[in-house]
Length: 105
Image 1 (cartoon, rainbow, N blue to C red):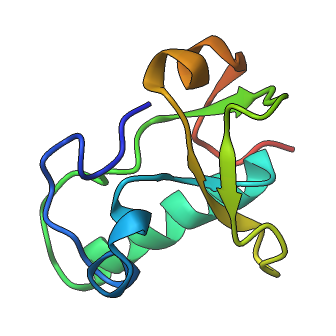
Image 2: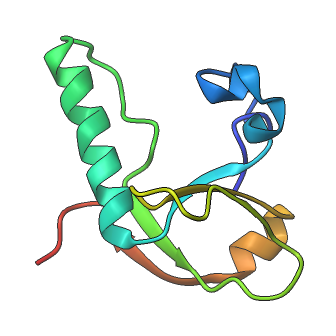
């Protein structure tokens, strides 16, 4: 439950133009949205012939977020993507389920 900034990764894309995005977590409103994004990244790396790991991860966590301790951005994006901000321990405590990041029926 760490942002790219907390992981000391260089900002990219919107994170360069909007530094606060670099401090947040990229999440999806649905499990399938997260799975689809990971698949697209893996396919792109393969198509480019790049032998490197998909940094999105092998699992999808479902968070049960309640209360004012979490900030949200982009809540209405068509693809279900948004950025959230919160204390890592609070976000980790909000994990309700964990699933493998593979397509489900």
